[in-house]
Amino acid sequence: DLSGYNITLVKDNKVVEGWPKEFESINDADWKVPAGTYTIKVENLTVEETYKTDKGVVRVSGETSVTVTAGVSTSCTVACTPQNSKVSFMYSPEFDVVFDEPAVTVKESDTRSVAMTVGGSHLEANAAYFEVGSLTWTLTAELNGQTKTYSKDFSTVKAKWSQITFTTGSTDGQINV
Image 1 (cartoon, one colour):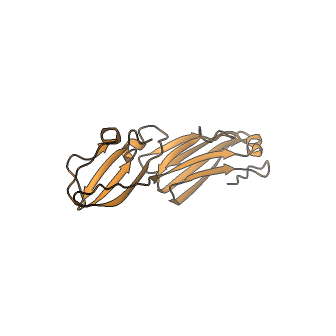
Image 2 (tube, helix red, strand yellow):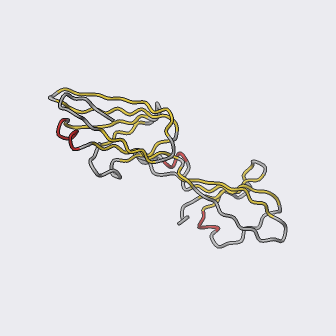
Image 3 (cartoon, helix red, strand yellow):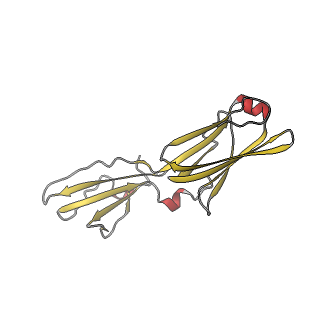
């Protein structure tokens, strides 16, 4: 379903006049353009639109090159792939027994950090989206009335779903990731 997707037509590194257009406005319509080589770019959201909500949403895009010959109908396919990373946190049953009130904060940059709950099997509810690049996450949890903190930097976050599980092997507060 491409409803809501934007399609941009580019020639010689410049957006063709009148573009981008929403898919609904051009669905099942003939596009008439002069002969030449074009790049067709498709995206569901811009980077700015992706993070209008606290946890963000998946952003997909793709592009392909197509050569148009005068008087010849040309079609193409654009494969769209995720452009941001989905991150979720969960903990083992042992972790839940040893620690109280676990919480995770994920910092993407100086301007965006997301507080997330750490949940057992509810990965979707505990997921958030971040730009590809680097992230820092910090786990805090209570152990015998004292706050334990564990932080980790990731410098090569890729466009995929990363599921991070916290475990503990003992009651001494050791946190394993």
